[in-house]
Image 1 (cartoon, rainbow, N blue to C red):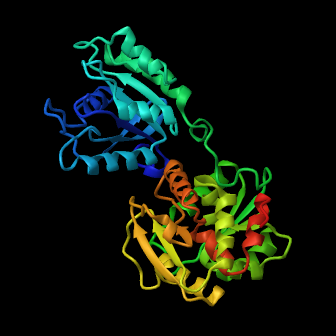
Image 2 (image 1 turned 60 degrees about the horizontal axis):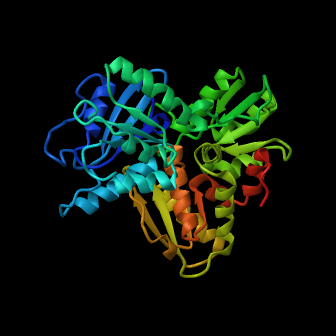
Image 3 (image 1 turned 60 degrees about the vertical axis):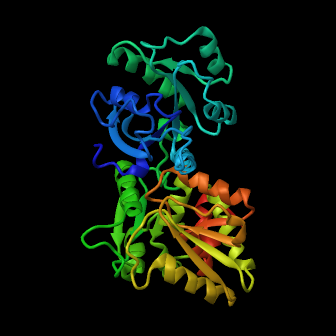
Length: 399
């Protein structure tokens, strides 16, 4: 199960705290084996280290073991920036502390007071430095639950797991599915999957797999065709919902009856990973672009760009054709994101299938704070093809 679960679908937990407080030792204790290098030398963990582990009953977890953020070396500021980026990706944060004679961790106290993420305080080194009542009260005062790391591994986990359960984000307690609320029981779903130069050989992409699996789990009648057989499939199966790859959305709408609900994989993904109304409003901002505007294309993963790459070539071309404006497009890939987003008139993000919901919402929050509209590939494509209002109808969103 762990190997088959994509990172984006795993519960992501960040371990943060001062250097040498015992974050990596704690991770080894939870795992019951040496998965992280530990040393009495401060700063052994120099960057964020990802560790995949399954922990019942939570299933596959992606642990982010961060470097100590009180590092005063010339690399300290870079390590702290990496830790802050890891926090953005986390669904849950373990703040690791010890009553070792130092003042309470000021960075962790500030994080607890902001409370932007569910936070659990874990007190380590209890055998060598038993925490005083005053120390425990310091953390209790900020409202974060506290768990002492002591006793056998089994005893510790029996204390840790209930505390974790109370803090889990709602989408992990009751995970949403792509087709929730838009297909009736026993309904029929028609999926349109083009097989072109960008289709991975021998397989289909993750959003298509997720929708197909969701339809099978719900016992819907599932029909999958290429864009060349849309009308035939509609006549034969009379679907309740039609879903297509964004690149053929114009053709899908042209081939469908006007009253047949239809949307795209990217819009379904936007609903799961982010704030769909906000992403829709971001796509509508394309209508107001002006000559000289700069647009940021954000890719969450790194990949070899095809000759007619969707983010680097097709979307810029379609937006220029739609607006008739002279625009500048810039691309950023991977986990990094520009700090100065205010220089852009619009951010167009990928579908986010390789990142989790927490990370996507963090990127949306960054754009909002900068006063910049943000959308995603598929929602933007639907706008450029003049069908955005139509593919938003199944969700009751109007612009």
